Image (cartoon, rainbow, N blue to C red):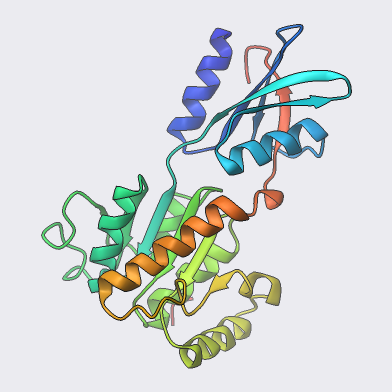
Length: 244
């Protein structure tokens, strides 16, 4: 592996960005598939490999490439430091997520309630602006407070995050969608929000609801996380690679 390739891989991982090293097996040519726009067959193959977290080899135009996936851990932003968030944060960390709990209500987002979890007391849109969502990010909103949940949802639907979930009944979700439409969010983006959040497993307790959320997140991450929306290109390694 070239030194500049290793440097690029380390940089991408530090930024939480997915990256694939494509190695042409006969010539040893290296390319990096990273977060820029390109519609080539090699890039599409690399994106699929990254989405599935599986390194593999492919043949394109008579050339055999090995696609070596380098993914950062998935990233979960929980909006609302409520009881469900406590269970969800623990379970997500067991599943190797990097977890952030966001809640501007300082009495809720405390280290006593969320040990070993990164906490933000910023408003959700401000917190997300400081640490933008990526292709391996998930957002779950739990407060039932439109002043907190809605800005988070707007930031999420305008990102490439793979999962967006919102707690509440079908009636609550219908009202939520109406608010977001009034704020100018289009139907394609609204369709990305899973509400009620989680798989329908009859969950009742905070822990059971957290299980249903983790299960739905996993299904989206592994089955159809939305990599086709990513901006990806292959580059030859040359040394540089509404709060109311």
